Length: 80
Image 1 (tube, rainbow, N blue to C red):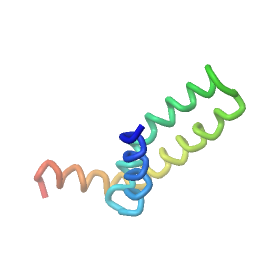
Image 2 (image 1 turned 60 degrees about the vertical axis):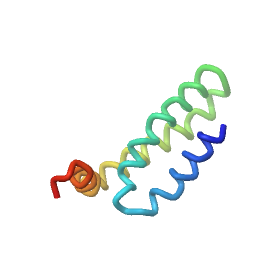
Image 3 (image 1 turned 90 degrees about the horizontal axis):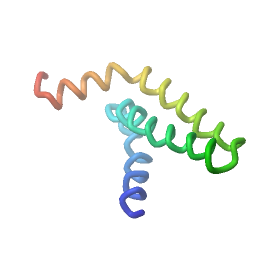
């Protein structure tokens, strides 16, 4: 529970840093996919639309920030 909370806090702060926004968007697509599946299978199906909409926003953000994400990846690999 504490690990998930810490990751959520990091995920709330990281999009404010332009270089990390694309990476965070890509990273949160996985948990939102899981949330959609849980909503569809175990909980109220009507509420599954919220995680699905968030996935769409994350994909758009990741696409918009793909240049910065490539720069970060090159920096991490040491090619800058």
